[in-house]
Amino acid sequence: MTPLLSVDGLTLKTGDKTLVSDLSFSLGAGERMGLIGESGSGKSLTAMAVTGLLPKSIVPAGSILLDGQQVVGTLERTLNGLRGSSVAVVFQEPLTALDPLMKIGTQVAGPLGRRLAREGKSPPRREVDREVLQFLDHVALPQPERIANSYPHEISGGQRQRVAIAMALACKPKLLIADEPTTALDVTTQAEILKLLDSLVRELGMALLFISHDLPVVATVVDRVTVLRNGRAVEEGPVKAVFDQPRHDYTKTLVEAARSFDNALEGTA
Amino acid sequence: MSAADELTPAVVTAARKPRWSPTFTIGLILVGIHVAIALLTLFWTPYDPTSTTGGRLEPPSFIHWAGTDRLGRDFFTQIMIGSRIALIVGAGAVAIGAAIGVTIGLLAAFATRFLDDALAATLDILIAFPTLLLAMLVVAASEGASLWSAILALGIAMSAIVARLTRILAKRVLQNDYITASRTSGTSWPGVVVRHVLPNIWPTLSVNFALQFGIAVIAESSLSYLGLGAPPPNASWGRLLQEAQGTVYTAPIGAIAPGIALVTLVIGINLLADGLRDIGDPTRRISR
Image 1 (cartoon, rainbow over the protein chains, first blue to last red):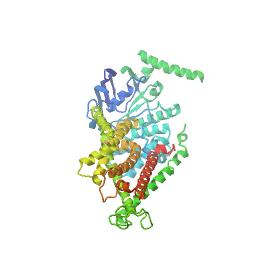
Image 2: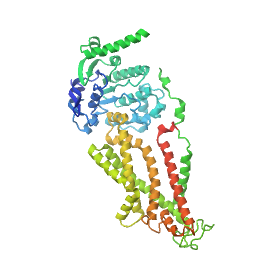
Image 3: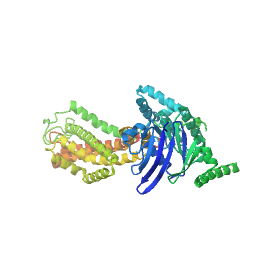
Image 4: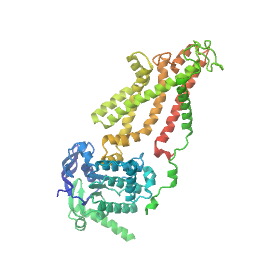
């Protein structure tokens, strides 16, 4: 079976600078993979390259096959058809990922309406609204009616991230890219969002590309990881193998750093 | 933390209703009076604006509220019709300026670097021309002065300012994460403009439109004063002021009345613009 996403020899350049070089990985339908590395290692750029939404100044080379469609060098119109149906993204910053002047309900209705149109349905407005409420309820938001009627600045950061997840889910994509979805949240909210994301991805059978710099976070939601450093993949394998017996020095440093942090926490507890 | 802890305080929800704003109310009343008068002139005026109904340069009286002009026509009637002309010119100029300006501004915001720079430079040159001078050029280039040439002239002069503002605002909106987020869920570029860009630039743009409306009213008066606006018998305030120039010492009402009309309308519009900003932007409503 051909994988859902297959990245082959992806290189991203801006001017003379190489941001990501010769990156290859693949992800089957329903698989869950983590992309980890420090900031500036090219994780988020890789994600944007997959959606075909790189800034104009960054030039991609190599091949990205998403759902059987080549992304690199493809026309905008073709790519736009992939977005939403094949891939959707949850971003890091829930504060800025929602349109400040649009009510939550209307924002969720956007991608939902496009998916329904793709499926050849054009239900009346009232039915779309009801489905919006269902999605808000699905991501465990309290009082969906009130939230749907609120503007983003009227709800909390954790709630906004739930809305962002609801919007991505409303697309029913085959691949969900989560770009550090919990980094901007406090630890307890983080745990809740992770649990939510984990259960929803399983429930809907989506593939997950989880981007993070946080090893313990990644370990809880994915099966395989790819470790990126300075735009190169330095290690790849199942979560357990990579974290228990890291082969590359950089991965060792990362794992040790996470471990010593855990130890420090336990020491004071 | 349970989900219930994340509930927003009730205060925030309560504050969503726009607060009563005195500036907005005063603006609304002033503009409302002018609009009501303008509409009224379509059906009724105290006297026929073009026929002589009294002596020449009569002072204000109960028969002629603002006296009569040099030809003995009722002056108050002419001021009333002036309201209509001022509003038509303001609205027309803003409509033309907005249509051209927003289109060019959005094009520039989405354009390639080269086209964007070229458009921005052109706009800067156009803005460097004083609005009135540009409008005079357009009027002079068109076939004689008329109400429509004045509207077109002011609209074109205004469009450069609107275009530059739109370009900057749209560029800033396009940098936001929610644009990328919207794009990743499959919103097309036209969809992004309609769903996100226009609503997000509208609060600032609408205030600018209101201010431009006021500027257009003054500019039309200036054009008419210079004889480049609506020709007689159109009773533009600018032309009334110009006609009153020679008799300002003997019949000061001829200068005072159109002056008051002009000032009240422009102040009203500016106050309205101020109030609009608070209404258009829900995030501002709680900060007030």
